[in-house]
Each structure stands twice: as structure tokens, then as C-alpha cells.
Image (cartoon, rainbow, N blue to C red; front, side):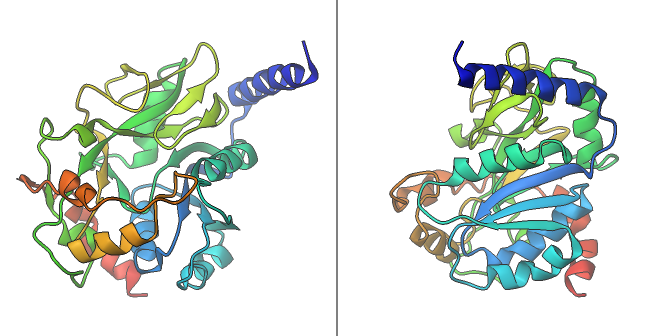
Length: 291
């Protein structure tokens, strides 16, 4: 066994030992996210997630040229946000791996999502942390929870409307209408995984990712729809104008930062079902954003 194998072996069992006996964490549910020029959206996204039970944000700034850090400064000063600057192309997974490595003993769970994704407790009687903790704590072999995408379309908006994202975009795809809805994002127990990816995580041997029905999920797709307890509202395109802005930033998961094809707008622009579930958070969210 070479030195690296010894290190990996020791790291695995140290992580699992601490996971078993550690009782208190600095945060219960954190989000790790990489951003580029998301200043117009980031306060709504942070304040919304604080409302649903997220208490820490590990934000990686990928060469933003807007005032992202300036907008985040209040949250950085207050301890809600841990800010890191990460230059280069195709560094999305690098950012996630860094977050897991640095904060696996600081946060009980870490969600790996983007700024156009909102974790939604569908039923409203429990927050996101309570749901995740209940599901993962009851399954001793679970290393993470797979949350189903719910793709929201443009709602017919050509240009960026005023107001909240969660108010402006209320139309989504049917649960059986679009292959993209089968994608998942993961909220992981960071001490039980080897490394995260954009959608899923590679777990230590003997552990797995489950969905909200406690069924095993292998890979980036969940073949059974799980929108009834906890899901991801994915505002992929928003208006056509906003999609073009997003497109100009390039794709963060590709080394050359390739531009998204225009077809991605139409592939994700499903406006078949009106769903206002998330609006129960709108008034409180507006109050927080007005301060």
C-alpha cells in the first residue's frame, strides 16, 4: 500500500469516527455554491434559504466583474457567508471539493446547489434542515439526500421583470414532461463522501445517496419523482433576456467556459403547471430584503 492509499484509508475512518461521535456543529445546514456575476440575485437567494433553515453559505466567487463581493460584505461581516475567490475556467467541482475538505467538521450537512436553485420544503410544517436530518438520521447508511429538480420556465417574460424571482416565475414542467426534471442535486453528510460532483457525490464504501422516499439513487438522475416533501425549484432560464446574460458567462463546469447554445432556453422553458407553493415565504422575504 503506497503512502496515498494509507492517507485515504486513515482519512476515511477518521471522518466516519468523527461523524459517529461528534454532537455539535457550528452550522446545521450549509450551502456550498460557486457564483459568477450573480449580484442582482444573491440577496434574495441567501435570505430565502435562511428562512427555510440554512445557516451558513460557503460562496466561491469565480471572477465576478459585478459588485458581488460588495453585496455579500454584510453577510461576510455577520458570519453568514464564508467568501472565497476562485479564478479560472471549469473550477466548479474544485470549489465543491474545497468546501467539503475545509468544512466537513463545521457543518452537519452541506447542500451543493447553484444560485438559480431554491430548496423548497413543500409541505411547510418543517424546515429544510429538519427534513434532511430526519431522513438521513433514520438511515444509518445514507451519505446524502438527492433532491429532485422542478424546472421553472420563463412564464412568458421576454425581459427581466421587477420583483422577486420566486414571485415572477410560477410556471413549471409537469413531473413527467421533461428529462431535465430527473436531475438531482445533493445535500450531503460531508464526512461520508469521498468527493462531490455537480449533481451527485461519490460515497465511501457501504454508504449511498437516498431520495426523499428513502430509496437509493445512483448517479445524477432520480427515476421516481419526489416533489412531495423537499425539492429544488430550478429557475434555469428566467426571462429570455436573463438567459442571454447567463449564457454570456459561459458554462462553469467546462474547462473552456463554452457558451450555452440558445437551444438550452427552449429545452428548459416549460410553462405547463402553475405552482405558487413557494409564495408562502414571499412576504417575510420582502421584509428581510427591505432592511
